[in-house]
Length: 507
Image 1 (cartoon, rainbow, N blue to C red):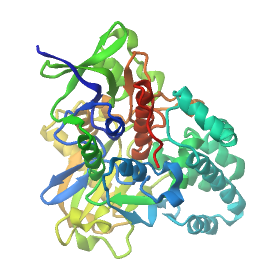
Image 2 (spheres, one colour):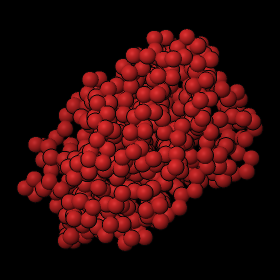
Image 3 (spheres, helix red, strand yellow):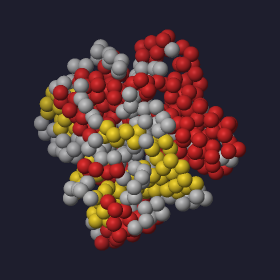
Image 4 (spheres, rainbow, N blue to C red):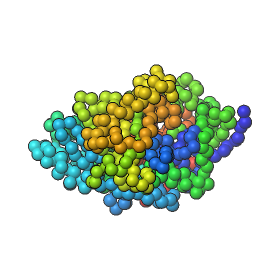
């Protein structure tokens, strides 16, 4: 076993967006970083892969944070980060965030223009007109408060003091709102059960929880920013985001090592000293950032049982069953929207496989597919437990994948008739795929808060181990590309101040 002393100031485990964001911002400040990634490409679930001329989004496909500063405030993190790094990511605006297809013939596109969206809702629920306006006004207020404040760590006392002094009223208002639930707030204004179901699916579409379990602050970020910064798709697919972050890291002298799996975080006397790779090589640093889930970090990468995290401490976010389809372009009608959510029955929308998520990104970026073809990316929630009794690659495993895929395709034909006959390429991924490729405990996308927990009880960037930090969807504020980006900014902010090189405000 070989050893290399102090390979960098900071070692980052995994090239998910949270870790890459932290590494890029630290490297720009002159704090040297070394990123280790198990796979041959960066990004984790926000990456791209190619098959037979198609370039698929591995996971994420709805992107916030790319709007103009004049309309988006400080939540506009991607724009600000890439400006700071001097790296360009071209995007294509999408006028519809999601088109919902719900029971009882309820169909509503969420338009970029908030007035158009609210008018659509009010046309369906005229008796709830004032309640609709009041509830979405609450979300906008949260957004406006957050937009007035610079991003930074909630654990950085200096940052909190400076923000509090500069924005005393907004800081107090945000503190009060941080204890509130999106669903309970909605119920102060709205009483129609079908409309409350819609509020639930608004939360479930990105938080994979109903509205009551979703913090109001998180909702204010996602459900208001879509009407300010908007939804913008990166040219070339989701992989353009991690590729640009990597370019920024390397531009300022940082390093990224692919096909280098970290198997252990080296801890000595309660302090993180470095990492050990699968080949036994050890690398040392002043600080380590884990982009792994809280369970992978403390129950797999840390061998000391004293730091073990009980799986039941938080709810565990689900995994996914995904269909990556190459289809004949004729199946996508003129005027069809890019992103859709389908719910067949409100009784099962939050059960495994109950809601279908659907995107056709080639409507915005035709370069992702061969001429005359489109991409269809459909996915439903799934659990490792439903698949682990099957041997990967076996005939029974392949048959189970094909059977579930056929069911999802059939259900999707409700909005896209003829889809099953238009499929020319099919790539399927189960929760076992997520577990294997992303090194995620049970293929999960991190912890979710239990009902009654407030957003400040989410794990933060610091950990019980000195000089071991965390970024990604296991940390505040939670799941989603823009959320993990915020976690990376927050983590970099805390570490940079610790190193005596505080981050400049992202402008």
